[in-house]
Image (tube, rainbow, N blue to C red; front, side):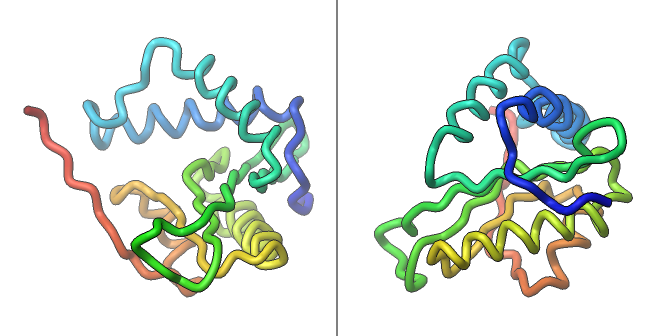
Length: 157
C-alpha cells in the first residue's frame, strides 16, 4: 500500500467515483435521505474542486496499482460558537475506500495522517461522519478514541 499523499485536481474524478459508489450503498440503507440527485457527480466534482482550492482543507488520497484506493477530506473550522472544545475542529464528511475490506489498511492510514496534519495545524478535535449502518467504517473509527456523540433520525413526511 502506498502512503497517503495530498490530493490534487487529477484525483477528483476517482474521488467522485468512490463517492458515487458510497452514495449508492448508503441509498440502500436509507433510500430517501441518501437518494442521489440526477447530477450528483457533477455537483460533487465542483464541490471537491472548491474544497481542494481552500487552505482550510486537508485532502488526502492513497494510490493503488491502478487508481485511488481511498480518500479523506477534512475541513478545518472553528467550533460552533456555543461550544468551546479549546480550538479548531476538523470535520470529515467525505471519507471513502474502494472496498470495505480496505478500511483496516487504507482507511486507517488516511485517518492517522489527516489527524496528524490537523493536529499540526492546531485542531483539537476531529469529527467523522459515518452512516449508522456502515459497520466497516465504524469498526475503523470506534477503537481509535472516537465516541459517538450525535445521531440523525429521518422519516418521510
